[in-house]
Image (cartoon, rainbow over all chains, first blue to last red; front, top):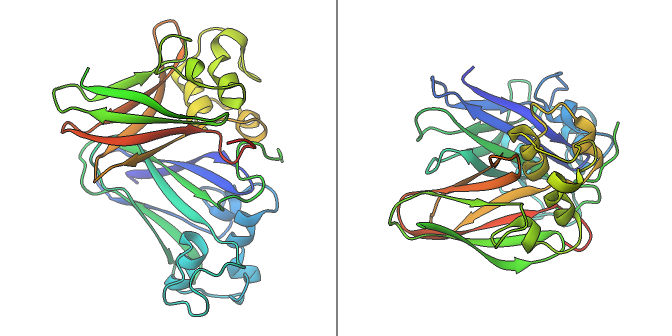
Length: 158
Length: 146
């Protein structure tokens, strides 16, 4: 794999990943929610908090989303706070959802993107891509529930 | 200097710098932590988490003793990136900072942390070659008083 993701900050409400592209080919990396012990939102979230709850949407359901396979629209609602095509309230103020933000670290002028989708089984995923820059480049992906208690640097150590 | 960083907002847990690229050459600006002239995170910060982070070289910070740091430790302090440091407790249980960028009108930048010759942490912003402006926010996310 030429694009890799490493969890470098783990808390209940904020995960930071270092996304590295070695420039050798391949454009994207996918972060799962299946509790796989690698780069996985379920596995990486610390404690019982919003990120963990969101990552268990397939297993437990979340808010108005029943347990089981999700659609891309539902994955975007959960991880990008984008309720387009989901139905119900646009931007449901009563439901805690996440936001993703990218900050380039090495390489200027690129076009890092992040989107949410689902795998073949309907588990939500996040895919980060960069196709414009050549050579090695990197960025940080922040996955957070804005303003939630514990979203910052002070978190429980588990 | 082709790229400048000007302090435009000061909070206990948030510093905002205007990054300006005049297009005349050079693509980086370095923000220091030595207590020198602005832009300097130690000079520019008020009492609080950012000031404590900026004093790591002289006072130490949590598991990092006083003295010279390396790039990995600087990234842990200023980018909340514990990769290659191995000190998970530092970033799980103690405040560390994050740097966010906001370009104006498509202006593109990148931000990284490193150290100077003696081992003082630095934050380096790299910009596109053409003229433009953007903001760098250095903050401890969601800390009281931010």
